[in-house]
Length: 437
Image: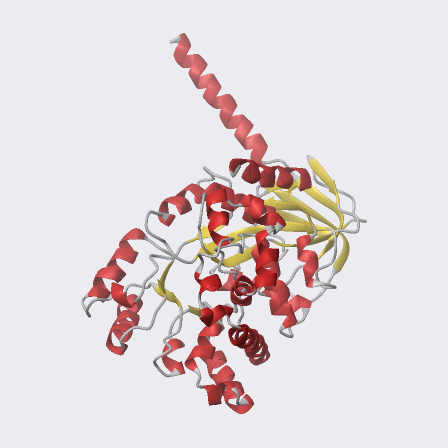
């Protein structure tokens, strides 16, 4: 009986300590808030966080009415919503890659394919239960290509598998026969499953616009004929059609740029000594630094003419990204993480490329905050710095509205209401580095 009482007392103490930990109140004092619901900067604010949510945003001149447990002097600093990586691929250890994401201010991520041997439903369960340190996590089913749809009846089997497993999205990554593609659209609609991924390059544009989102602006380059790609009138017309469809588009310019960097000897040498390679397992980075990869041994990429072609194609993609933006097509930042394009770090470079396409710094920042929050049906809880929303925030040294590169000047991150200062973030990075030695 005494043992039972002691056990009960221990449980009560643990429960109380958990409640106390959860109710710690954090206050950012004298911070400049970039709310992201409009293009503005609200200076000298107090942002109070409690129970994992933004409790209050008020001028710092107001008298504090809450008992603050943790006070953060944020004078001259900038607070933005947590960033969203909409095109993440797990390549190595999930806990390490989550640490890389969070250390880079990414508080939500969508995995864009489940490869053999992976279980992203289990990963999502671990993330949702906080069993591991993680961003808010969204899943996509197996990487589906043409050979996965052996006949028309395969469609129902695949859709039912996705429904039973509970993936957030079904991804197609190849051109499908017209009858199978139409059957997939119909069946997925009946089961309330959203389809994402690559375009149908062998069908007219309108067919590709029937899914939820397209993963690469490169897809449009391959749908259009050479004549269409060179016609501004046609491209503007196509951009209007894309806008009318309501589809979301991820430019993923960075991963395309990486292809030409792998293929170019001088750029390749720079990649091989990149300071962030230390965060990759040695066997993995050794392979991607070698001449074994296709981008370094295939003349389609490495010839002088090929390098010129790749450069022109990247410029075309940036040009079309801007045309889509001007038409109001919702753009989402996603970096398609694999190879030496590391999780976390890659998203900041993707933002730089999107901005260099012609978007303002504010519009660029929207592609990693407000727009993906709406897309993921999370806008009620994420995407802006607003009272009542989840406390997923990034504190920056410099203003990203002045220069989008300033998204990299991270002082600290609030993830699921927990504050990680620069020292804690550096420790996360060190843990990843040490685990790969």
